[in-house]
Length: 235
Image (cartoon, rainbow, N blue to C red):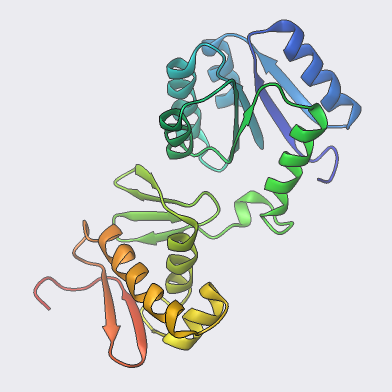
């Protein structure tokens, strides 16, 4: 992380924890603002730009999730990290559906939080978040960094493999993506087992895109696949 270039939004109702987190960020030259009231926090988020958002869900899981949905609607590119104790699988699933980049369980070490933030930012390859390509596919919006595919503004989190595959197809939109190229880029080798796996995942991606009949994922027999947009009905 290039110190001083990222601003952290911190929602934490425990004043002691909030103070400790903010002090730690100051020691690492990270600008931050802390909030304990949802209305005040939402107004602040709407009026400023925050690169990283930390939300403590302690004892307020559903309220925290609702709040997170609102702020992600304001700035979907914000790095979202939840903090909480003993989340259930359902709660973890919901967190990632909303757009979470990580879920940190209590108790945690401050240095661990810092390193996780570094890792998430590192996955943007040193570019600003706004430089990451977001693809418009008919009524779908595809965000590879967040691993989200939205249909009519309703987001769905997809798997890493589905994301990597769809991103490669988008990079070759309306042109042939050759089988060998897909296998080497997404699966790292073109073994028979991976070729079978690729065909399975192509079916999954096709199903993900089936709500818009102006989009087609076409199997070009023996050669590869084409992800096509603006397809005419009945063609």
